[in-house]
Length: 249
Image (cartoon, rainbow, N blue to C red):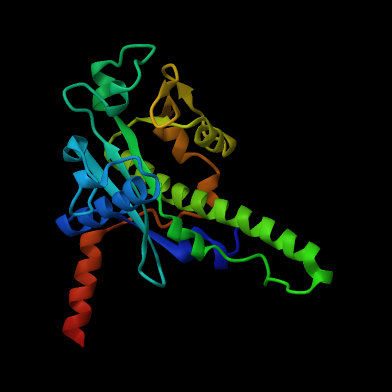
């Protein structure tokens, strides 16, 4: 069992970006990751520091923030088909044609991102040591800390996935498509999620592989029994709470 102190639900919360303001926050998170940190997108194309594309008109947007500082740290979108096409099909050809029913009951998980800034919210294993005699312990602590940073990023990813799968089930979505790196595919499989490869690998910012996942199976994963019980809230609810607080003041 994850300790309450370090659980996702005790530290973070996920929001559905259901207002223009919240979608701007979502786009800015993507800008920070895809333009500033990774260099995948050209900054000059987004002078307002909001990274978006034509698929956002057909998408549902989520983002996660730190409960205690209010800092936004990660994002993800669910893309609906547009005229019987998903984004991943522009980069690789599915092994089997996608049926009309599959298009209607599926979404593509896209633009998953976590800021590097999220690392500072990872708890250290223990304080740094300064003496030569304790150097071994220090090195061990740094290794543990790096491992904790990696887990922190994964935890935020799982929190976003949890929100996305709950939303999918609520809206009769039966299947996900994702286009991911081999390392991310390995991490997802390691947590017990069944992934069906639906096409050959393609070159898109490195090697990417398309997979399909069953929503019902994702919901049944034991990972959600340990943590990630809060699902998501609507950003508009956060605004309503803020207005009510100001009126009481």
